[in-house]
Amino acid sequence: MVTREFRLLLYCARSRPKAGPIKDLVSAGPNWRILLELAKQHGVRPMLLRSLKSVCWDAVSQTIQRELERFNRANLQKSMALTGELFRLLEAFQQKGIPITALKGPVLAESVYGNLSLREFSDLDILIHPADLRAAEDILITCGYMAQFPDRDYRSTFYSYQGQYGFYHGQIGVAVDLHWELSRTGVAFPVQSTEVWSKLRQVTIAGRTVLTLADDDLVLFLAAHGTKEGWRRLIWLSDFAELLRRCQNLDWAELLERAHRSHSSRSLLIAIDLASTLLDAPASANLIDRARANSAVRALSEKARLKMLNAVPQGELGEFLDTLNTHDLLRHRLWPVVTLLTTRTVGDYEAMPLPKSLWGTYYLIRPFRLACKAAKMMVSSTLSRAVPHQSK
Image 1 (cartoon, rainbow, N blue to C red):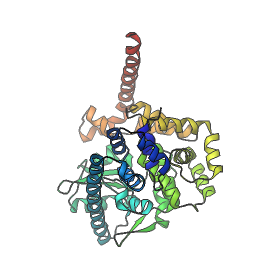
Image 2 (cartoon, rainbow, N blue to C red):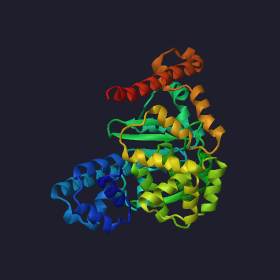
Image 3 (tube, rainbow, N blue to C red):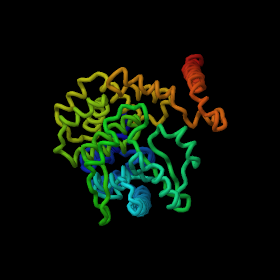
């Protein structure tokens, strides 16, 4: 059951808020604390503030007004600081002759929402060529950043399957995700990093030009990213919906064909179904019909809606199984399973720390460790279901 507060958030989390329903729901007396917590959880407080201001600001209590205004000032200050740091990093990479493009963060806020203050973001994401990884790491370290896992051999062995490394600048409190791939190993993804470099587009932020993904690549990227994350947060759907509002001349036949070729058409259809249903995003009737005619897409979309409403985590195993179903073909659902069984991770090392000379042993140990972990999860799930039954 969709609560009054979540319905109000849906009507507000868009650049074209629905004034009538917003006024009705505000007049009915929402629980403002629940609404603010939902907006924080889903990362859409800037849109909530703007929509309420444009529709019925006088009907909002002064306490809530002050809280939202206070958040807005802090969010703008943080966004400007992160944008300034992005400029500094771009200059550092340019001086070393390393090509770089920005993902999400400031470029997404400016290019999709038209204003840095309208989208919450807390870190920076940059994409480089795989061949430039070592040089890019050195640049970040020179700029004051420290890798999440400082030992390069350790990162390469246990974390490179993610296609990105995390870095953090302790003095200024900024985190940077350094990407050389757009997805982790073993995942069918509609956009490959090798495809995007030849058609990057320019975004102007505070008078500076920044390169980022072309609109068609961004559509596929946002759809796949949201689907991979299970659409648990409304901000990911808002990103996709706002991009559809801004880019209404996209070649959808070509986009669907690209998604089919990469065996990830479900992610695109799920995004279209959710954005059009929940946020009234513009999409052709043909696309919506295709999404709703697909029983797998309908089921996955319904699960995504429930995840948005339910703040309780589904669990690691459940999330993994749901992700498998987003792939079009059976063999691509098996691919992540094979990758999971054969990829050494940080968890393997933490469960059994071994000297570097024995790291190859993890290939043999990992399947057994995962089997034990899965068995424990299933026992725990069975017990949690049995306890309420026994108490009746």
